[in-house]
Length: 222
Image 1 (cartoon, helix red, strand yellow):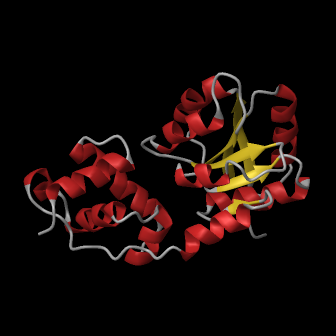
Image 2 (cartoon, rainbow, N blue to C red):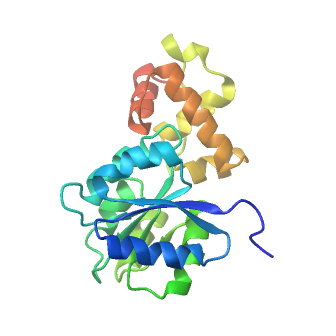
């Protein structure tokens, strides 16, 4: 069996109980997937901290806690899960914004149930999965944009306490690379990259990737 390791743990966040129940049923029936929990938007951050899911399926339109407002907070967690946005509308209006905020996917609630398991496994493994019309254009714009060429690792001040590998990771973050791109560049796993990012946040007192990038730019080049 292909997925015979620890199942992908998913947190479903949607303001409609009927949707949460339906998605739980669909995902629990998929190979290699387990629903860790389900909640409304205002409960999402606390649930993610407590359950530590691999992936959050996050509704775009939720009263009081819009998905695009919740997304940055989820991605700023110390062990940030992958996040895929959910929508019932056949539109790509929010795709570009969600990708800029760190989402790895954008899924239609109306897509075939059998596709959810494939999407979840792909997203949890660091892939991208988008279904709304127009999403291909947004993804094409992202992947065809040239990756910045990293400058030499910054040094000076508080950055002197970083290991050589942490300085490499920090430089690549400052250059705008994603965790997956950093892992590919360094020849390591995404989990290893996340571990280095956690260490960087602790050492530099940063609470997000933006804070880390700012610290690198303040230090300046060697």
